[in-house]
Image 1 (cartoon, rainbow, N blue to C red):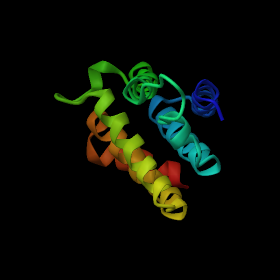
Image 2 (image 1 turned 180 degrees about the vertical axis):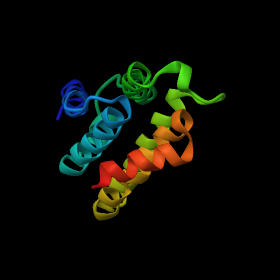
Image 3 (image 1 turned 30 degrees about the vertical axis):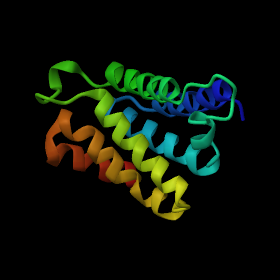
Length: 142
């Protein structure tokens, strides 16, 4: 799968899932679930998005573009006034992408599916605090 297509398909899966929810924490949770599910169904996406095989490819540029695009979705959904001090969207997204990529690389697709509520909790935590983020993570898991 070519890089632009892989990124476009991942983005489409995330955005379609977000569109099905009304409240922003549910949109974030749905987007995380959709992104992880897309990665599980297409494990080659990690290699495609970070491939060094193409002549002149720039792995760092590709990584930063993926993180930037996904962080942009988070930034649009999560209200800036609800963010706790010190939280950065890019760091949150990079953490989630890193965990997903690690699980794909070592073949832990079963554990990756189980990890989805924890990824929701991790992402919502800086915006909502533990109790509220946990409530949304639990709701997404149901």
